[in-house]
Image 1 (cartoon, rainbow, N blue to C red):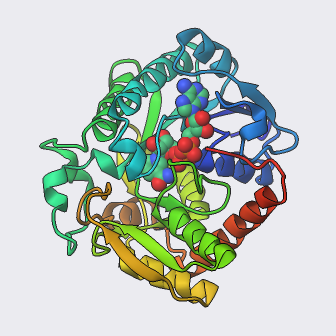
Image 2: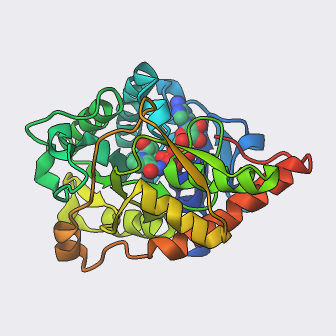
Length: 336
Ligand code: NAD
């Protein structure tokens, strides 16, 4: 890539794409177009020197405008959230199929060299995730398919769209299956937040209100791995520029497996406070266990996401606390 080539990043008012814009800007890229349907006012990050467009990429005409002149396209826009959102709003999740469908075509018509799609571990066969002591998921475990209803099936179909744009039309496409991502500049309240951000916020609220009762969704024994966002954006860059990975979905996740109860204990340690836990067994909780098998990424890239959860969580807690206090003081902060 020439540093003046145009990079297009969609979903940039949101969490991961916002961090990706920052990452490429810091790397010295001069022409970055950041796109989101949210009003600019609500974006988590607005990076100086970047072109900001507020457009809806589920609309085909907008996608052509978005991809004009692009050398590389990173499509991270999706209607998504944590389990509370994806179990409740399956239609919205499925409708994200319009985004990737129109974006691949627009990128192809614009003559983009490379196209990146952010898939998810929710594309994996759910029957392999029914035990907290789960075997880590490897790339082949997506088929035979039994993806997460709604969100997971949309991802699986969109992966296939990417693969066929390479096989039939020769556009270099890249697909990463993100496992849970956490870190600063992402959703921490409002209903779309994921477990790490939700637990940090609940602790901050507990301290603020001096009420240390906390409700945990599920029995606390569900297991997950959590990838720090800096690892995620670095991984996206590495995957996008590895020709061995053209049209080849790959895990991008941490392999540090923890239970939700352990996650809560880590937040307690950071805040130096204890919470009174109760468990809501009727709340959305997703699969019983999920981890990322990183054999393939280590083999092909000689690298894997490795920020320890303790370290990433501390930074995330500090950022959410700052956002919470700013909002309490009447300042407008980004929203999901
Ligand atoms: P996010 O919700 O913070 O960001 C997504 C952004 O896309 C939002 O700002 C939203 O406004 C925007 N968007 C939605 N529909 C749009 C449209 N039609 N036009 C323009 N913008 C639109 O989510 P995120 O966590 O940053 O996720 C980014 C990508 O990574 C998504 O594709 C998501 O499915 C995938 N992913 C995320 C995780 C995770 O743990 N965060 C895990 C697996 C996969």
